[in-house]
Image 1 (cartoon, rainbow, N blue to C red):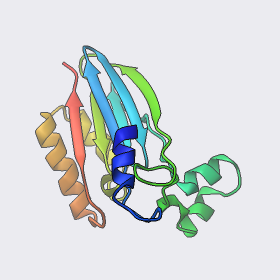
Image 2: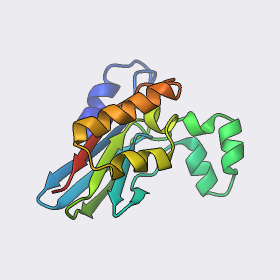
Image 3: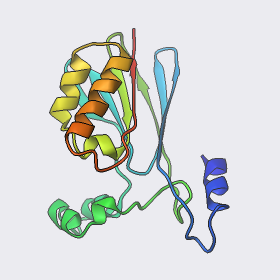
Length: 161
């Protein structure tokens, strides 16, 4: 992550270069090692329950967590779309975690192009259908595009067997 951050920063001049988000899961046996920067998201689906295991690293979320703003105020001010941490940005603060998987679990890594247009309930329904990962990805991307598709949509689904 640090090398990627420095490489992206080297593309810009005066701190005005490109930036990106990154959510990564490395699967070793039944364990997922997780690293996250930005507002792309990671979800874990088990037994009919969908749980987001990342936290959006936006100014809106940081100010809401600090109690300085309500979620509505952050959204109204556009701060829910301002990254506070990103690869290539002035700040890059990765979070690291791990998750033990069981047979039947699913992991979903996605950009906010999905979550802007597809509800958690709709995501849960696709993952609950227990279809192959490629079909689940296609169904989620199609739902995001049908819902407005105002941002890029990247989706990765992995299933533990």
